[in-house]
Image 1 (cartoon, rainbow, N blue to C red):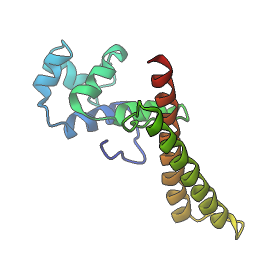
Image 2 (image 1 turned 30 degrees about the horizontal axis):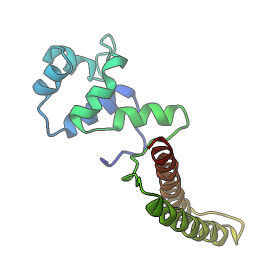
Image 3 (image 1 turned 180 degrees about the vertical axis):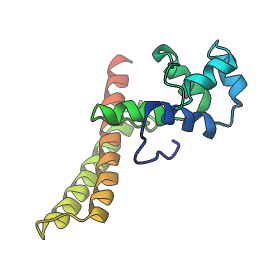
Length: 154
């Protein structure tokens, strides 16, 4: 997953960042989105507020560019986060191992949080480390949920 800037100012700046960071040329992105090159460039230009990016094209835009700044901007604006799920096991034995690992790692994460809170304050460095730890735990928990669903359907 591409690295995301911590503070994106506008949605259009996020779109522009995705377009600039893409390995796919903007003309090809425009073709994939079934729009003209100039319309794409205008829609992603923060200095042209009269041009808008069509929401229905956002998912395809992210797929083609490989960028998630625009999607992350929306998520952050709503107080939410998104992340990629790891590979989902589909065998009961693998799920059993995943559960054991999740419990062990969640316990370690809680210990880390407890240590950070021991002095009744959390520094910016601790907050950043805890954010990473907690996000990883949520990602693994979501993977576990998807694994259980997959086995139940099969």
